[in-house]
Image (tube, rainbow, N blue to C red; front, side, top):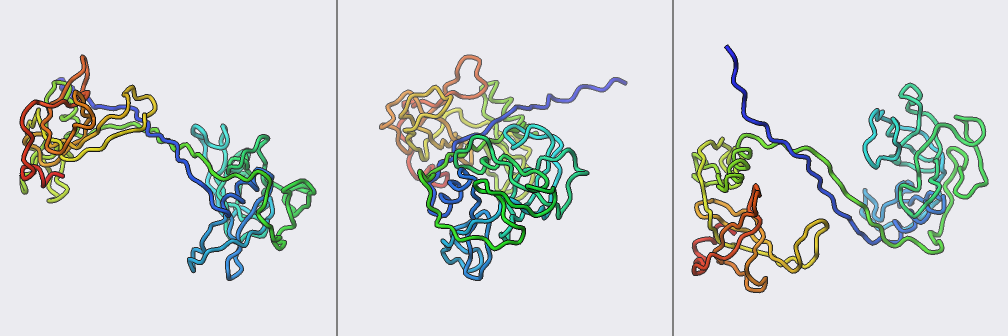
Length: 335
């Protein structure tokens, strides 16, 4: 007997990314500027430990620490893991090892990549040295990676007179002022997550409903709250939800914010309004953009309805219905 095909499994590639901008205090500024100058700095705590990478507050006592020291650009692998398939923007474009390296003079380990021909060439206790990037800007990527051995005989302590070179294994770290010309005072780190999303039964029904211009939630059999979008289970009662309930299409603005910063790849002129909207019959609010009204006229209690673009699988935005504003008592529990 021929079996029937199951429902289509929905999948979509998603990317979440944003630039994270932060200013640097004196310790982090010195550390990153030092990398640009091929100098590795750590910080000494009150009990004499040297932390690399440096931190601004002692993780044990919470005291502020500013005592900078220079450590070696060679060290010892304390532990490692082989990465057979590097991903985009990782330090090397070929298989490599992630290693924790305790640099000479440091009491903690630094995480970075080790360029090795294969996992058989890596072991805890092996001696490694920094490979500096050809172009350095004041970032952790100024260390291109680590490589096996040291100047001179591989695997043995060595010396170099190059800037930011190694010092003898186990040598005492040297005090450093942390002062450099043109110090790095801030960084922009690009945060990005690529993943494939596959919704479950409840959210697949919700997405398929939207493509038919219907908003479908699920009701909890215990508390009777209707969840939109549905989650497949009630987070309050902890029981599965299966009863499907169509809500809306109109709803009420419960809270909102005015967006004044234009988002990358989003063709919407600022300012515009994003709001939480409690659709009629729903037990919690979803979010959507408000259009068809000046941004400074959007308000709590405003009655709105969805506007669908041609061929769209979800509402493009919500616009006023022209009804009187909802009374606060009718939506206060949904804020």
